[in-house]
Length: 205
Image (cartoon, rainbow, N blue to C red; front, side, top):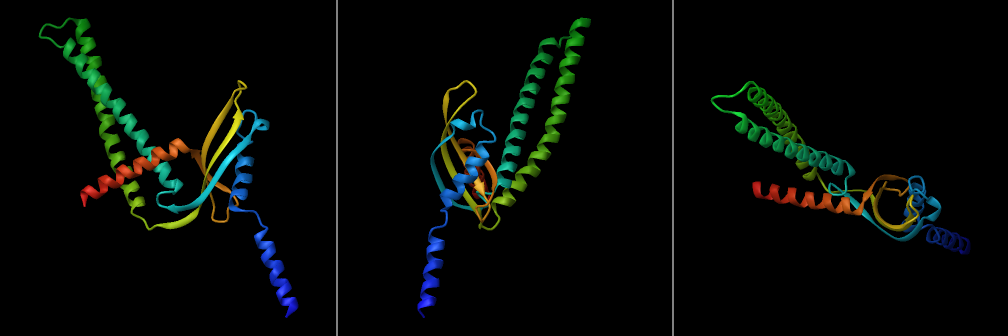
């Protein structure tokens, strides 16, 4: 009986003396950052906060799809501006008595107008498919996928100035490897996008 109690005590002590989630995260983060910092020897951790990560909202795959959709949206706005500029040029050069120079300018503007419009139509279809993919992911079942941690640190840049880093790291379920990372500001922007998409989805119901 005494031996059983002793072994139980040893097991409890062994488990309780193991590294905490923050310590595990800190080691992985330190190893990762030291590969990317300009002056890794100046790295100094400040604070690490570890929390559970749940899909779909903390799913890195969802982040990538949202970033891709945002890039499409930026491309759409650029093309829309090109359409507007080309249309304005067409109006400027179009007249009943166009010279050869004016005709060339008009045709060039019209070519830009048609090309941008064609790209917009193709992009619209891609954006619709991408939007549907994101909505489908947002409607998936909530499940534990690992851990996430915000990590504040100091390090010098290539100019020798000390900067404050504020990054978000994602880990597997056993806290053995980093699966994804981004800046906290980027994470917050993505979460804001998710919130807006949820609101749009709620309005359609």
